Image 1 (spheres, rainbow, N blue to C red):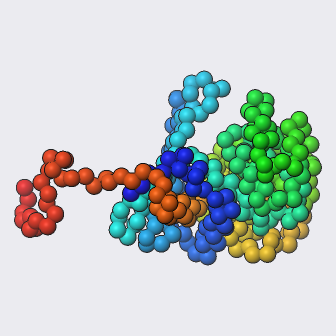
Image 2 (image 1 turned 135 degrees about the vertical axis):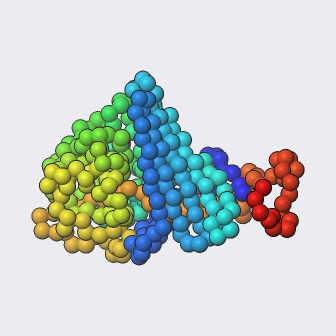
Image 3 (image 1 turned 90 degrees about the horizontal axis):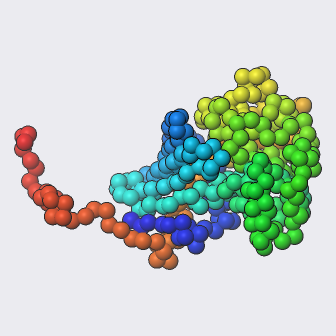
Length: 348
């Protein structure tokens, strides 16, 4: 078994490959029922939670990931957050790798957004907006440039002026965005009115822009609000949109944007057009009354499996990571070595 640190992931990741693997995860999910499990454990006072994702791509692969977070008593302080992923050889019940999955998660998530946009967004899009200035925003912007290098203007919108300034400074140093105008002074309505692509990566409980202001023909990726009580899109946006999902399973249990729009009556079930993995040549023709497309991204355990397998294979080929042996010697554990001993009879 090998242990991969955050530095190891930084050395191993290949963004274009991550996008291709995300699309393959979408395709496999749409082709048949995937072996996947999602669990969500939450508590209050103090506020804390744990998201569990487990998935398999066949008898030889299993990934189990835990995202653990806690909110300090000072509500303005950043959340404590950490993630670990274990990749298993399931057929042999042997762990292959333990991965520190903070950076892994950000790449996996941004790659999923990009794969969806590559199927849905205008091929020659030049304007986009990203809502949210937290840890997910920089890679969301960089992966956007992989699939839409035609981009010329990027609006950045966030609630914290300090974080927004830091995001602008970070993206200004990225060679991939050298020719892109970064605009951080626009209102939410102004940003979406001029954007052919909109990505939301927020922790907001309420809609982050007015749906009526969105540009006709736009493609919108909703990447936050992955619980029933939160939403990033208002009813006006949902009424205008043809909706695509990474997976139908659990969408109405976890996706607050859909759950709340269904309760209000704003969501027409016929507007949920397809899983993203069924698309080959772009979106389906717009439904009557729809004038934009929306991709609700929940994230798939299968994305974790495929990306982890690729990184572990590269790590092993390049001698990257820290090998460890979890088995241990029986004599060091203070127990007899029973391997190969005759079958024990009766009860002790």
